[in-house]
Length: 395
Image (tube, rainbow, N blue to C red; front, side):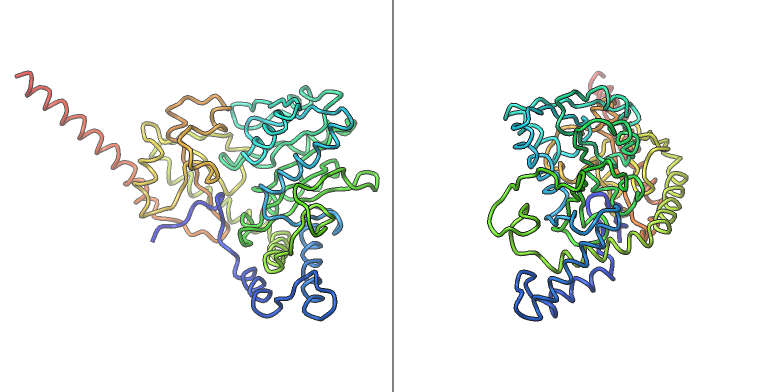
């Protein structure tokens, strides 16, 4: 059976998290909004416990956590939710990067259509954005700076701590899409200068369909966010609707486990990465992102002369891998992330993303290599056949 190596798209649910979810699906199934009986009270307690567990990872308070359906919704709420404040104060300039997830880039496009001006900073060729480039893009009327923590395609860690330090004396709000880094790279997100943090449950071994937005207070005041939906007043009035208690409890448990175990988990992932890099040397891969800046769980590489589609199909019996972001896999265009790094077209077309978790087992790397080399062998055979047929026709 193929080894699953696409954890950057979605990760397995930790069995301990699954037990927590099942408890609130089958036993404690009350509505957290029902305050007149024990079922509702226990559901509300589970939600508030999860709020504390999520907040602890980023050094926030319980009252600064808003539960959402995932990082995509959180990104939309963070960016679009500040629009009214920006328009009313004349701060209509936004700064982000060319390598952000589409759930950041598309809301920015929406805001540009509403009269906001957007500056997208290009990355270095190694896939990271220079902090000084962000600072140079900021103006007096800048409302928001949005920079992801870890790139979802390359695994390159962005210098958000340094960016936060450089923005210390500027009033712009700082948003971080932490879908790939929350619960893994702990300390950077605890920087108090970061105002908004988007969190995804299914990247840290919780279920799909749940996430959060951390909204740090400034000088004791809540951030001037306006809701994207209306009706019910839940989650500080920012996210109406009946709370999915089982999913929220699962996110809370996953956050608690991540905080307690992140060092051991990262060590296990680093060991996996070391073996992967050693085993794949015969293929002479080219890495699409500075390896010394990547997280332990993600590698993006190109095997020269091999397209990603060919490689993914060839190794499918050995490992389940991706050619980039699962969120944009319905399009045929090359990765906007790799394009922003100014990589050549052949390198982009051959890009493969391998991503794992701390419990991943090593695949049959010899079989993996044979499968890739088989593509080359088939192509060589096809080329030689064409030559022979051409010679025969000439004769």
